[in-house]
Image 1: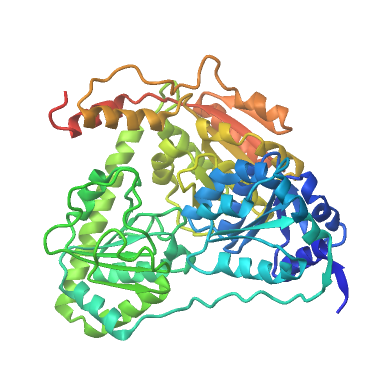
Image 2 (image 1 turned 90 degrees about the vertical axis):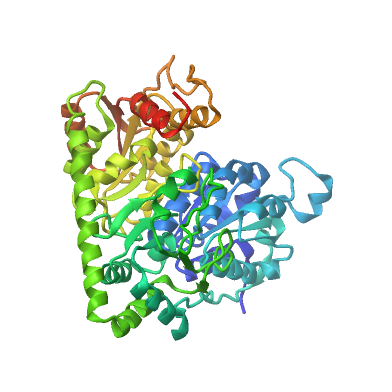
Length: 571
């Protein structure tokens, strides 16, 4: 075999496995790798100004392609910058390969500048983390890392690469990485039992998450839920595992408060969780989630999640799409006409319930029009009316997401991605990563003002590579979601409402349009519906990135009333 430099071999291995983009922030100890890009022009290097942005761009690229994305960070300090985004990628099973350069191994004992045990630093927030200690291990460990990242439950992996590993000459033993077939079905006894439970249940529900989207199981879920007359709720739901237009899909349960989740789960006598943990809440309830006698089944790619928090009647590890298809086949074989009639009656009742709730919410939003500042509902109604067909929406509007979902009703699993993981700031860079993965598509990136402030550097990358991203700031000039959570805290603790902590982004106010100009992006600030509509039309008609800073209402008066009423003994 021909001997080639390790850095060149690494890039050729990535290209052999279908990687065409490398996200990174350049540093001194990675100079050998950066130089090797001249020898492997098939791989495009996308520069970010800070590693959190780099990781979030790679996250968006991986989420929208369902393939591992690759990112380079700079030594221990760069890994430190990236840790928040690495945490959210780990929590949400994004397939990433992250690597960092290190000083030569012979220098490690000096504990010098930029030094640190990188593999141990990354270990808590990765599926696998290791240091390549010899150049002849390099390609084998890269292939192993890619396989681990891509195998469900997917997630990020990390490799530390000392300089001498990248600079040494090695044999050109390239080979295609082995990616695991996950079309894993279930035993007939398991799916037949669940089909029988669905026949006997009077109030069944499905709890679904991103594992359904990963398995391309949306259509199979829709078919089964309609056939059995079961409501569907999203739990750990950021990719479109169900269409918001499906008659049985009732929306998202949320990830903050267990007492809110219980209001839904207590009404079911049969609960089937598929492709999601149950329940990944910030504040879970210590009260029962299920009525006496209710039965819980759980299916996921991840055996760790099955039965982790709640005992189940039975659990299975495998492909969610195949699970739905098998259960539907068993149900169709077993169900008598009376069963089908009951299921049809439930379906009609749920459809009517969903329609009535939508009409009531629309009436509420209609009453909010023509206010100054503009209400989030009016803003999102304009977004839904102006968005071009085929636009990919990357949503981190947080406290305005409910309004967006109402008007947009996303249904195409390739066209809507919700920010996830609890790490704010993932939305804008994720949208840029998505745009680089899909250069033929228009991308709309919605973010709250607090989230956008975390990752402003991504505007430079968007401008440098002329991505077709329209950045929209839902600018309520505050961390509004924190105000809502503070109201919950005061109510739960029986404390009086008082002045909020420093949650307002004022004195001075942030002018995102001016910030955008500084990074080379066309920006405009708008206040009225007419201004916003015109700005969207202009942005969608041009090539390259644009930013629209939308000033909207940020009060929590409505939440103040509802939260107070919801907590007994507090007035």
